[in-house]
Image 1 (cartoon, rainbow, N blue to C red):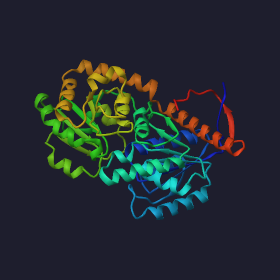
Image 2: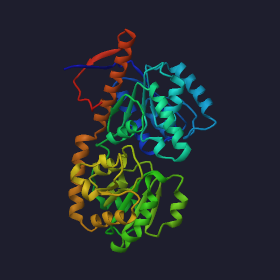
Image 3: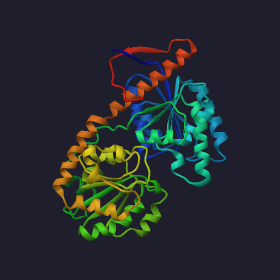
Image 4: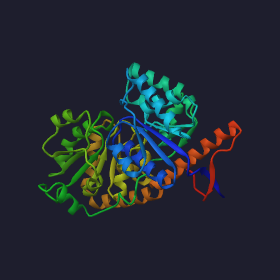
Length: 396
C-alpha cells in the first residue's frame, strides 16, 4: 500500500528556544533526515552550537533571539518570529518545547499547519501560580496546534489528564544506532580518565545539571554506593544551573566532566549509566546508553520507564527522590558484572528494534503528511504530495 507524504519541495520551519542536550539532538536528527528526504528545512533559533551544527548539515538557519522561559521579552519574540514566518513562508511549522510552542502558536495562530512537540510538559517543571498559568496556556494554545506530538504514552496521558484537548500522536524518541554503538570500555576509559584505576567501577550520568535530572539525589545516594563498592567513580557529564551547588557537596570520587561535544565515549567507558530524573518526556540518555550496550538505572517516572523493555524494569528502575533505593539498585548492578552484560545486550536489541532514529523520522513524516492532508481536505484543495513506499506509522 502506497502512502503520500510531503512533497520534496515542502518547506518545514522548526522553532526552538535556547536548548541543549536531548532536544537539540532531536531537532538535529530530524533536520538531517528531512534534508536527506529532500525537504527544505529552516530552523529559527538563537545563536548557539545547535545553530552551527544545523548550518553544517545544510539547513537554513534564521536567528531568532528568545529566552528559555516566558517573560517581558515575549511580545518582541513573537513579532520577530512573525517576520521570520513572512520571509520563509513555510508549509508547516514544527515547534519544539514549551517556550517555542508558546511564541510559535501566538505568531501563527492556526494560519499555517502547526505541530507542537512539548518534550515534557512545562507545568510539571514548576509549581504554584507558574504551573497554573502554564497549564492554562497549554489548554488554550492546543486549539492552534494541528497535532501535539508526545514522545511517550505517559506524556500524552498527562496532557489528557490535565485537560488539554489536543489532537495527539505518540512518536517515541529515536537515536542514531550507528553512532551509539558498543566498544570495549578499557581503551575509551583510559583516554577519558588517564589517572583513574582502569579496574575501578565507573558510573556515568549524562544530562543537564538541573533539578529535573536529579543529580542531587544521585549524590545523596553515592555515599552508600562508594561504601559498598570500593574505588567506584561517578562522572557527571553536562552543565547547567546546578553545577556549583552539586560540586560543593560532591566527594572526591565524583568527576564533573562538563559539557562535551561527543557523549558517546562516556557511555562506552561506563560500567553503568544512571539517570535519576524527577520527570521526563522520554529521555535520550537511557536509549543512548542501551544502544552502546551499557545497562542503565533510571527513576520510575513517566517517560523514563517507557525507555526500558519490560525485562529490564525490575533491576533497572528505582523510585524517584529515594537515595537509598537508588543506591541499592546501582550497587547491585556494580557488584554483578554478568547481570550488567546481559542487561546491556538486551537493551541494545530493544533500541535497535524500537528506537532507531530512522523509524522516528519516518513517523514524523507521517504526521506531517496527515496534517497537510487534513488541512488541504478542509480547504477543498489538494496538498502537495507524492507517492512513496509503504511505511509503518508509529501510533497516532
